Length: 153
Image 1: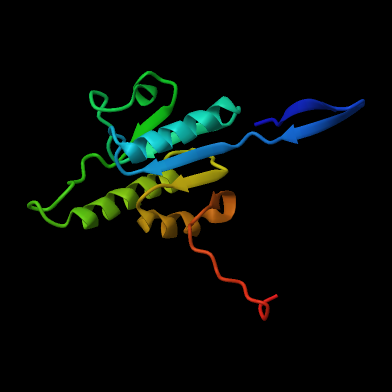
Image 2: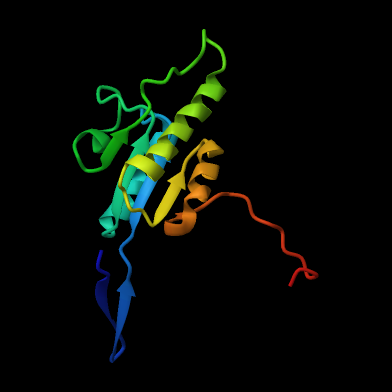
């Protein structure tokens, strides 16, 4: 992974801006056709158009029911854990979704061989502890932020 150098002209001065190309992985529970899927695919396409390497890991990807970008090779999609049930006798759908995403995270960390710099975990946060366990080589983002007060500074 080599950084891309962009030369920008500001008035009569030349400055060099170095943009680091990142290996980015998106974790998404089910790449079907929906609003959340469209947002994730659009974000991945935008990052890829800027030169980053983007891989999408999902627990389910049906090529007959998905967006074209995930089917035609514009995005690299790897389906992991599709053999796990989506529910247990019509119940426990959330539990099954959590388990499927943990399997996806375990695959990324221990079996995939994907060297990633940034991981976007979408919709189900159950995989974050697995990713944080292995965070020495990647940045894991969660939506939790500590409120900083004047006394903390």
